[in-house]
Length: 549
Ligand code: GLU
Image 1 (spheres, rainbow, N blue to C red):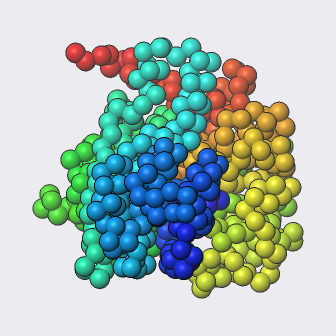
Image 2 (cartoon, rainbow, N blue to C red):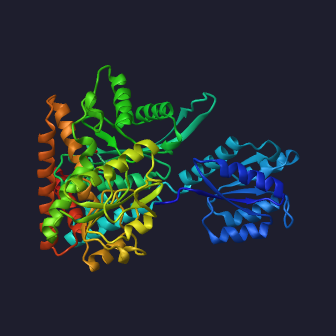
Image 3 (cartoon, rainbow, N blue to C red):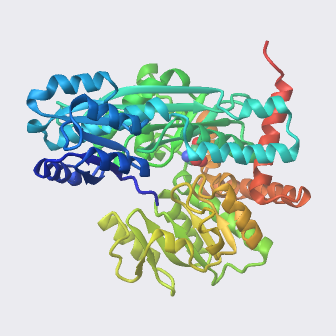
C-alpha cells in the first residue's frame, strides 16, 4: 500500500532545536512525518536535488549562509516544495520578508509546540498541492491512457474522444469544519466531478482520503462512466471527495465535515441530477448524514439523493455486500471460461475493507480456500486456508488484521506475488506495476479496487496469460445495486434480498458476456473490451442527442 508519510527536511544548525522539532513531528500520527535533519545550506540543497521532500523547515542563520540570502539560495532549488521559515524572536522581520519572497509561513523557534507546527506544515503542503497539482494524478494519466487506447482501437469519433478526456463539470470547494475542542477550525478541500451528463443523472461515490485531488476524482468519475455504460445503467459517471484523513477524525467531526461538504455541493446533486454513494473512507452513516442535510434544505425526506444509505432510511438490502458479491459472481463466470473448478481453488485478497472482506467471504462460500488477506497493517497468510470468521472477529476486536494468531505475517507486496488461482486487489490504486507484474502468479485477476493495475503491467499480464476481470467490470456490482436502490426509492417499492441478488447476478453475467464476446471479436484484452463497451454506449448516446445549440 502507499506510504502516506510526509517527508520533512529540517535545515537547522542548532542540534537541540532540530531534535526538538524532530521529536514533535514524529509524535504526530495523522499526518505522520518522516523527518530528515541537515545543518548546512549546501547539504540542504543537495538533499532537495535528490527529490521526494514534501516540505522544508529552514533556519535562515546557518554556518554557510545568513539571512535572506539563505532563503533565496534555497528557494531556487525548492521549486514547488513549500518552505516554512524557522525564525528567532529578534529575526521576525526577516522571516516576514522571506514570506513575501515566497516562503509559505514562519514559526518562532522559542514558541514552537506540536499542534501548531503540524498544522503549519500540513497547510503549507495543502496549499502547494492545491496551487500546482490539482490535475496532477497518476490515476488521471492512467484513465486517459486506457481510454485513448480503446478509442483508437474502436475508431471513436474524434470530437467525442476529445469531449470525454476531461469531465463535463467539476466543482472544487474549500470549506471549514469545527474540531471537537471548539477552538480549532480546519479548512479542507472538497470536490464533486461529473464526467458525462448525457444519459441521465450522474452517479458515483464520495471518497475521504488524504491523497484526493481534482485529477484523482476526475479519473474515478471517468471510470464510473464506463462502468455505468457497460452495465447498461441510465447514468453518467461522477465522483466526489474530500482531502482529509477520516481515521484522524472523531464521529462528531466526521458528521460536521459531511454536513458542510453536502451543503457546499448541494447545488449540483439531487435524485435527478447526481446521486452520491459510499467509496473509500465513507460508509452508510456518512450517506445518512448526507441525506439528512439535503432533506433539511427541502423540508421533507429525500432518500433518493444518495444510495448506500442504511436500510431503515430506504437503503437497499444487499447494497453493502454488493461490490464483493458482484465480484464473486464475475469470478464464477471467469472460472467457467478458463475451465477452473472453484471448489478447492485458492484465492488471495488484498484489502479487508467493505469490498475485500465481503469478496473473501463469498469466495469461501463457493468452496475457495482464501490463503491470504491484508489491510493497512499488513497481510496474513496461511497455506491451509484462513478461518474467515475468526479473522473477522479479530478485526472487530482489534480494528486491524495484524496479530491474527493462526497465520504468518506477510507484507502487502509479498501477498500479491503468492501463487494462487484468484487474486483480488481490493485496496488502493497502482498495486500491480511494470515492476511486479511478471511475478504475479494467478490465473484470474479480479480487480475490486479502482485502478489497481498500470498500463505497462497490463501488457505483461496479457503476455503471461492471466485472465483479467478489469475494475470497471469486476467492481460494478456496487453501482448496480445502487441503481436498484435508486429504482426502489423512486417507485417506493422495496425488493427482497433474493430478488436483488438474482438481478445482480443476471446483470453482471450479461455484462461479462458482452465484454468477453467483444474481447474475442476485436482480439483485445478484457480491459480494453470493457472500456470499448462503455465508451461505445456513451458515444451512441451523445450522437443521438446531437449538439446544443
Ligand atoms: N463507489 C462505488 C464505485 O466506485 C459505488 C458507486 C455507486 O454506488 O454509485 O463504483
